[in-house]
Image (cartoon, rainbow, N blue to C red):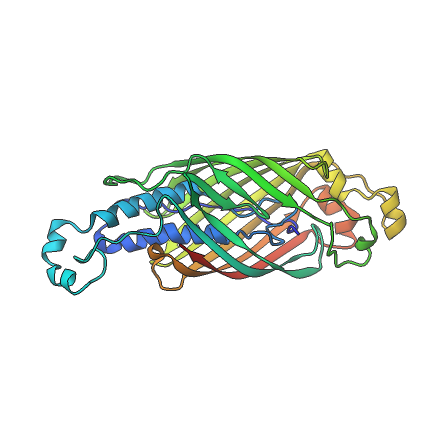
Length: 365
């Protein structure tokens, strides 16, 4: 099941500039935290939020994450500068930490990596519902064969412009990065598990699979050397003949690392739908009116929802570069507007205010 209207976010990993050796773990952790966040973003995966029937969710700016990882990996693999090695000879013999004379440290983020996880979230039972239910939040994000993979609600995005770790020195300021690729999303709003006794009397809707494209641009160093601001958009069409409509979902997100093993992502998004989409999910037909007692209603397309989302990801060993376990939490609010708020399914039986929350655990390898 997909989440009702929940905000979409695009996690922009941070691309840190060259920093002193002592700060490198922080930069790397940022990259991974971003990945986690993305994951977090959960993938918010197929949870209601994800499943947000009317809004995109869980888009991760993988191109930016790869760029951050690339810079950090290059620094780690080169090892410390000669001056550092001269003062850390004993560290090398005693098996000190990476960068202190020991064997070169290889970050988990290379040409192929993945974060998988599972969690639980509280989400509306349908788009516009004021009844909430617990829903599993699976997560997967990574890079395979040069293609970035990130969650997109109950679906996924591919980034065909994903850049892998560079093999040579990485010096100079972080650069603006671009992502682009196909998007896929599963939507089963009001297909089943509706918890409102009246709305449940309306005939169930069909499952939709939406296919389209997504793209975005990420700008590093907005407020701090290691933060990142991203803008993105998706457009998708139903290919199963359920709602037969189109959605456009723009969004903006801000990503900032916290220390060496945590990251915070804040995002805002909007969803625009066409008449076919609005009519399928928000109109009350004569048959539905007779079955539920709700007044008839004809919905038109336009701005469908606006929302905000916050995601906090914490690496359990405080070192994002080495992979392993992490915990992610998510909280969000979205507001249905236009006919998605005016329909009797929302205005009489539900609420235009939609909340989501969740927590999960992920593993990066």
